[in-house]
Each structure stands twice: as C-alpha cells, then as structure tokens.
Length: 185
Image (cartoon, rainbow, N blue to C red; front, top):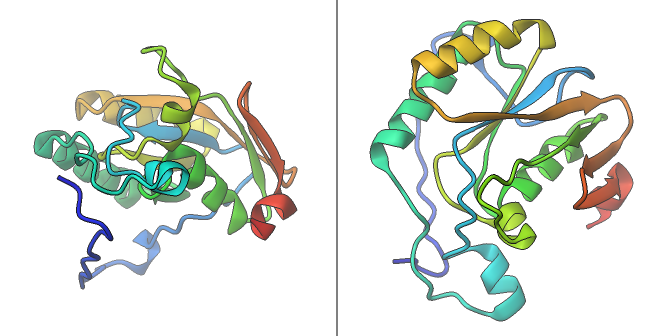
C-alpha cells in the first residue's frame, strides 16, 4: 500500500561511459517522443489524488517486477547504442508532468497524442502514476532500429509525437500550454 509521504531512496552507481549520461530535457526538434511501457490509468497513491482530494492512503499503483526489469534493461541498451537523446521516468504526476518537465528543462516543446486504447478517463490517463514507464526521445531516422529492439525485448511502447522548435507543449485534444506558462507553474 502507499506510504505518505513516500520515502525517498537514494542510490549511487557507476556510469562507465560518460557519453551514456542521459538527461530529461528535450534535445533536438524533430526527435520522436516514445513511451516505453503501458498507460493503465492507475491513480492509486498518486499526487493527483493527494492534491485534488487529500487522499493519501490509497493502494499503491500496479507493479510488475518482470515488466520493470524488461523496460529498464531495454532502455539501458538503447542508451548504450546511442539511440536515445533524452529519457525521463514517468512518476510523480504521471505522463503529463513527465512531458512538461522534459519541455521545461529545454528550449523546445512538443506535439504529442497519448493513445487511450482502454478508454480511460482523461485525468487518469494524464496523471496516473503506474510504474514501469519511461519517456524517451530519439532521432526519427533511428525509428526502425529502436522499434526492433523494443519488440525483441518484449517492451510495450507508443510513439507519442515529436519534439518541436516551438516552446509549447501540446497534448492533442487534452492540453496546450506555452513553455513560459509551464515554467511559472
């Protein structure tokens, strides 16, 4: 079950090749924005429930250790093959916040569409904090190589859109905010 406030775990590791350090910020206009993992719309234990309804004691979100392992190993493989320009975990606040943070730390914006195959409520889709999701960006010309690795690794993924030169985050049909608005909030 959830623990509020959620404890923070600090870790130390060794990165053997400095070129594999991958930050959150969008890097290049035209890069593909790809979500590794599934959107389940699970808002249990989320910041959304806490901020809007004061509900801190709900169940923990869905978690599958094998799915997490596959996604982490696959993301690392993509980074080590220099196929990833940026990467950001989808955690506090859900996918909408992960997208916004990648834009806030960058001079660029994005145009995305979040697939909703399960007909989730829009707020659950945007702010669900289920585990095992990573938002990555990659050059468009690397699409085939990336999708081949993802499929071989049995990792669910969705191509959400592209990084844009315009300092604006646009989530089709759901939200559109200028970069300056995001930074102020």
